Image (cartoon, rainbow, N blue to C red; front, top):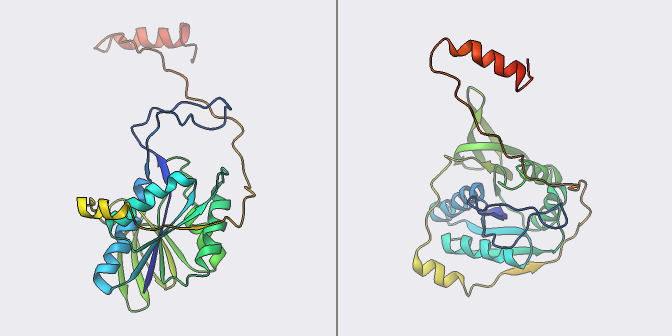
Length: 248
């Protein structure tokens, strides 16, 4: 079995984002980049298959030279081989998916894991786009996964409940929080990952279908005001909403 996790590099969730001078990208100064948190579930799922069924495991990322750091993180977690589709271009989800699919179609994977979304753009579409390009089924927001022979049985979240989906491999699985508990790399794995080779490939598609025309931070909210703590405050609240806020 061959299991592949597709991962991306994103700003750490604790990063205080600043808009860059071009008004379309974030200012990279002082930003710490990490593996996309949802992609850690994808990596863990691939490593667990390696442990249970001796699966051959890969990670693939699309990005700049710095994206090698998240591949090394995947190595430290137990992944066998890593591939970087190296590009300096800012690609949208369509272009990223097309590049991934062009590499994946040569690899004949049985199961391809993604995180359900990246925390930077939150498009939630790269995994399903890849599946469409490859002509294989995809299952999103998966919180539990079982494999029986050539069939995957996935439990996925839906509004107000859950859904059980079966599909034949090859298949794309987009992992949701709760699917597993990603392991913390140990010191031995971290040190070994530093010297592991990473295969580089050139992008096959750089024509994004969309572009960011403007990026701006949300407006700072004004201070709140407490007008009272009992029923009499309702009259004052209505007055302020009418005369100050002018919303009624």
